[in-house]
Length: 235
Length: 148
Image (cartoon, rainbow over all chains, first blue to last red):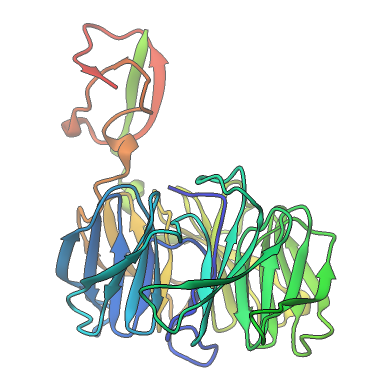
């Protein structure tokens, strides 16, 4: 159930100043508004948590097999399985409804998105076994048919996180890179960081919280052109 | 020889409570809320890191939630799984957490509750009256009726 690759969720509940916490991984639990969505091997369960101490199960859908991930984005859930990605509309949040599928974006590929683009890392030797390691940038003006705009080679990518136009991409033992993605046709590495084996990141205001293999590393990202190491808490 | 389940009926398995800070052995998902970073210790619970001053962040405590593999936080409520149950934990005081509610048997796919890994061969079938399965061991077994 726990895979090697991770992603940062970028849903409406992810603001530092907001009531909800921020997750940074291939979550099977995800919060969107007043609902908690949980995926298991074959099902999607929807809980109303408007009274947070008392979750109420509202809906159970059988949605497929080998479901791995759930990623909320605005009024949709992207649900990944080993064979593809299904999109469920949560415009009625208590009742997710199948809206379409994007078969070339697979479950174990970490995804983050903003209004116009989705960023996906693929890594060979991962669950799905990608042909080329890298960062894939998609235009998502039509959510149901993401268009691959650029395939940017990066070694052993893992999780990623987005702050404004800077995408932080974990590269395992190869460190981490900050990539300027303002123009998705021409991503540019603005900074490379080594010294840690990076697996997952959560941008949290001016702080970048990194899950590295030997602990949790913290970086100052108040100036994304000059990312500075603050501290590491060892395992 | 085959696989046999190890059961536990310890009431502790379902107790959600604070424990002293401990080292990370099986690092899991990270989660951030306010001045705290939470990290899953797979199958055991959640590490609490006090991040009030990032230059001095330390692991300050632990929340015991056996079977835990997931975290989500809404306001002062933390959601996790305690084996197959969804639990809601009040973390308004992270050093004095309290379980506030539980939805039982939400999760069915903690597969090791039912069988050892696929391809393990014959195993002693799970008898739920004996408790919850917390592990599988290889041992001599009699007339096993289950196979994987």
